[in-house]
Length: 133
Image 1 (cartoon, rainbow, N blue to C red):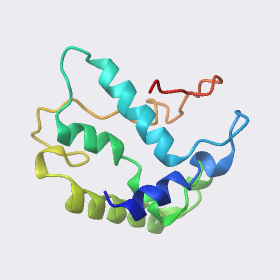
Image 2: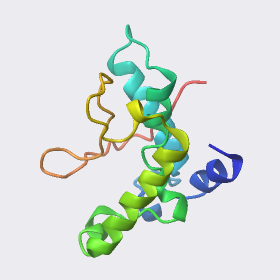
Image 3: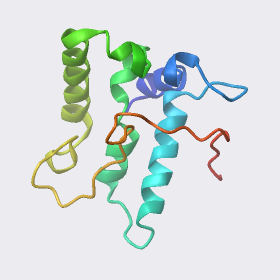
């Protein structure tokens, strides 16, 4: 990922800037946290570089500078969802090999962390996430 893309994700807030913490969480911070959580899921089986990159890029469609909150996403329609899918496919084509692309079938890689639960809701920890240096 290039510097421009990384800066964009660091300046785009998750959940439209709505946060229970004093400061909003950026998409870049969220992506790093997801990577750490994914690594902790299987501490004795390190992620491959491709799997780690996939975790970091799972929200790269937010490069548009817009992270629609879930209640709004429900009303944005098929066009928005199609645009998001095209952006994610473009990111995957640019940065990921075929075995680690989002939703790749036939891969032996463990699934990436997803935001939702079977009910479509995401639980949010009220404690601000931190990642040790």
